[in-house]
Image (cartoon, rainbow, N blue to C red):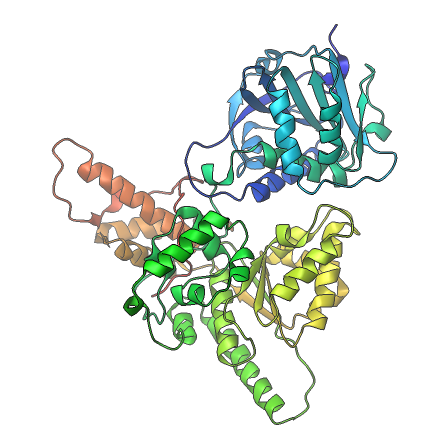
Length: 581
């Protein structure tokens, strides 16, 4: 007899998407992509109309094969919604609704993960228990199904051919803290049996992270990584590109703000261990590459020309002026303190607001160097953080995580990107705990740490409105405008020239049309859009000139027909930061 409990509340499935992991090799922050997918999944379900349901299901066929699906019982959810929800975790391809029915829907036993009657604790390494769980499930035709309802609650169900082994119960109790396992009695679960959002999101995050391929087997693009400098500004350090590192080692270092060989040479073992996702093998690779690099290739100049880097950025006139004013104030503050002149303390914390691709991260890294140069910071290496670095999974852990981050950032600049991601739907949750602790730590370490919050203008207003004490501790606000059409044209020319190409006169009109501010949306990417244009144009050029059997000798000039608007997700190349004239 079919077990009705293992079917969604509204039995008519209106859309199914099969989830597949990318085939490309490269670096991926598996935990972050899984957490974002789980959060989007639950939040989207909460916006559905009455009786709306989102579902995710893992099926195993007993032969070691796994099949992942997302489905919905709401007409409001489209295929592109699933693609957006799981975009950094897995690719979502359409599948017929009947596909769900092709998998076994009659199980000897069905179990529900429900809220525990008493508080429990998570295991030290949850992912290990999930992997062991998956190894057992792979031996049978089984399934795990997660459904989320319009009220923000959801269910986790496990279908097995036989009674659940004791070892599996133990693994599940460790993997899903603050829950207990109950066999389904055939009736619909009451509200008391549903998992609240605060449990469902972290549990689904851990499950997805453990299920994904190893981090070094899939490539996920980092939307926040800004394009590399144009031109050839005079450099006073040896870039880490000289080391010819693997993709994972390179990206871990760049994400952590390390750009030069000189920085790496001065690092201790504990400094390397603090870098997120940098494995032991990566650390050994970096040490070996540095050891093989001849000493004479290392620049002997004293320090980077930070103001030169700032001036070399295309556009951003008002931003540059504000940075210079803040730097001048920092110098004055340092000199007054040296003379024991008392002044009202003013923190140098800042808010950077602007649309994607407007060089917020670039300027933050330059600002770290400027403040080090004037003597207010002891290091020019910024600490870059996001929600995953600040918010923990369980009660009482978030505040400790924030304090540890500020300890690492002492004497440095702490850059918190997309700060509004800390906001929760309901006040008093983990995100608010993180914000409150940030306010406390900013006050405690105001003489030793500078904090920059960055994000989109409208969302940043909501972020600062959430905590009354936050705005008063962030006196400087710098607005990053969208690039004008002329500035984007200069960036396109720089990006092309950097790759050995020039642009034909007839192509400039086409580029101007694509870069017209009236035709751009707020999330068009600005400078990142220019990089995408050039890279797609080069691919078109290669096909046009070298695609035939009788390939002509290339002139490396991009013409009008080579330029078009690239589709989202076409660009997978990692690059550096900023746009220089």
